Amino acid sequence: EIQARELLYEKTLTANGTFDTDEWWSGGTLPNTYDSFEVEASLRAADNGFKNVLCTINGDTTDGNYRNALHYSGSTHGSVAANGRDSAECTGADGYGNTFSEIIGRLANPASTTKQKVIISQYVRRDTETSIAMNSRGLQWESASAVNRMQFITDGASTNFVAGSTLKLYGLRFTRAP
Image 1 (cartoon, helix red, strand yellow):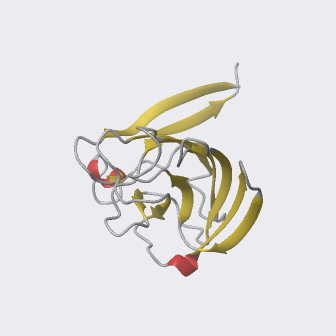
Image 2 (image 1 turned 90 degrees about the horizontal axis):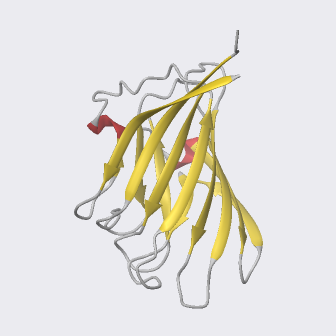
């Protein structure tokens, strides 16, 4: 197979803010002709304490339309499942030093109109000098609609990320070699 990886959205915040593919693909026109989407992000929340990174697909902000599962490890280990748009976690404004949470994620079949969408992500979060956590999360959007817009905010009071936070969204295509 040959894989083509195309940059669909890229933003580095110069002030506190959020991420929305509508900035590049207005009106929910994010192309969904790809086999999968891939997210790379380096994020730090504008509010204190670690914050959940919420992913909104196609403008659907109803938490009951999403289900997520978290497996966490570090000084403690565990798991939890709940309704909500939680797709990752990031270090808060009062986190250790100038650390940003590094996040990678993949959403398969963004163009499908018969499959619900699932985002799988892995990330590292550092809150204190002695703590570090590596987590995995799965987020299922309980809709079979094609994905045409993605937004990322925090669950903090400001919902923002700090300046220097970055997010890239790639589209991946797979073809068979002749």
